[in-house]
Image 1 (cartoon, rainbow, N blue to C red):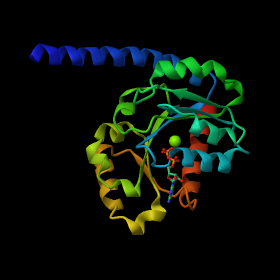
Image 2: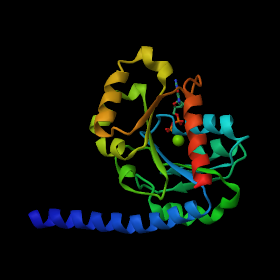
Image 3: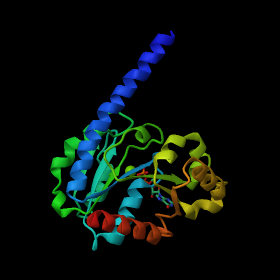
Image 4: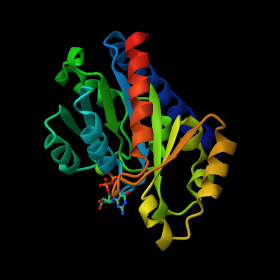
Length: 225
Ligand SMILES: Nc1nc2c(ncn2[C@@H]2O[C@H](COP(=O)(O)OP(=O)(O)O)[C@@H](O)[C@H]2O)c(=O)[nH]1
Ligand SMILES: [Mg+2]
């Protein structure tokens, strides 16, 4: 019985190794073209697509943005982004709970990277699996929203350990929840002392300037590098 368990672990390790090799190829493409790339992750409904809509609105006149949408089934999110007139590709994972590097690699030829500064990959809504699959991104961004509860960092530590940024969304709903901001911040910083944290509302726009300033800085660094 013990042997079966060990075999499973080995298979998963091999899958991750294969994924990392393709992620490295993606990274080379992003680096060569100086495209700053983000892997945006959260539970379903936290507000990933809303953040994209807001962000595009705020910086589309300064930065050339493109989006990869990951979803189990629909093209709903890509349709929302398409309205902004920026390049967007939808990947349907057909049941898989995360994007992997190969899925991303297979759509990269759809983009003209010479004309893109910032690529945002909206991952499948899930706080577990996406954390383990490198896509070749520069930074992982994790979002939680106030109605989800403030225990997400301690429950899903791998995600918070790997993310460079934590966005606490739906801050406008704070008065209607028992969400304790100081608790999740403390937990996230215990897991990952370097994580940057911003409170935002994609409904009211609160806090989004700081987020967009940071994004701008990252894109500039990538262009200069
Ligand atoms: N009140 C409130 N609702 C939000 C906020 N951000 C997103 N929503 C709503 O939350 C729902 C899910 O948002 P969506 O962007 O589709 O989440 P995703 O599944 O993570 O991409 C939608 O009904 C949004 O309008 C916010 O800051 N405040
Ligand atoms: Mg979405």
